[in-house]
Image (cartoon, rainbow, N blue to C red; front, side, top):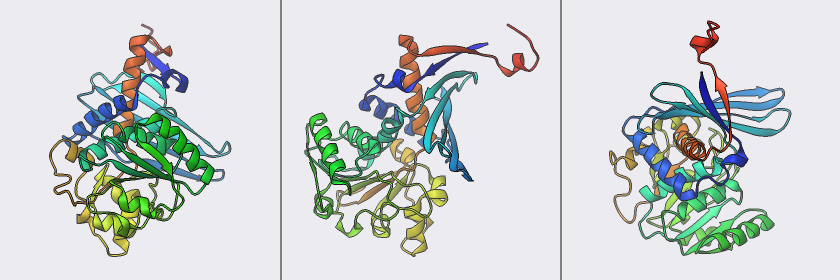
Length: 334
């Protein structure tokens, strides 16, 4: 028999800061860069009712945990539920079940923050954000933990959304945050470009990127959808979260490849390889770098473990007893 901690979204909401997530996720990608196992998502689609069930996993040996995500989206309720199980990587026992909805923007944002720290110029201070939802907030908050930002421009096609985002982030950050109606000028002056949208077509022209810019693209992971154009992919030092994911669902890369702008050799390295020092990231101030973030269990396990450990220390959440298979299948009670 083992005791499993169950954490709701309310339980985990205040347990960790964006900087905490970035540190945990950085360590997780370092482990990945040195060989920790991780696999891309696998999705099971339903047409009637329309929806999808998605799962992916990773093992973080040095953290001592493993697990991932299982989540449903769509179907009759037209909503999503995120479950993150955390297992002990040494003895295999189940440690926690975490409602992953509240941590999702933070753990995903942390992956973007780790990439900015590894790939953006050290003096990067001007950001443009495409998108105004929870994921855009998570990306910007994480980015602000690794770079000293002076100015942030935000674009959303809905004026009220970008205005609200700018007002909220202007209070949160030391940087000035402004909504923009036409983002091209903001892209041309940006050191960091973040895309966190549900767009199916590119949201900016890759020719507008200045030398030395860094791009984090995290809003699309579908072979027929993309937030960034082939020019951006071709101009950039291309770094995905997982190399294996690129030919599966990295739509921007796949469409650039189909157009003959890049080939498979254009994949420079995984983020973990850069973080672990096994591959160079930026090699000059003029390099354009691109982190293609489709989401992995690397940051999910890191984030869920962080929350579990803090909740366990403070006795937050509820607990339930789970039987191991040796007991449940034989009827043996301990």
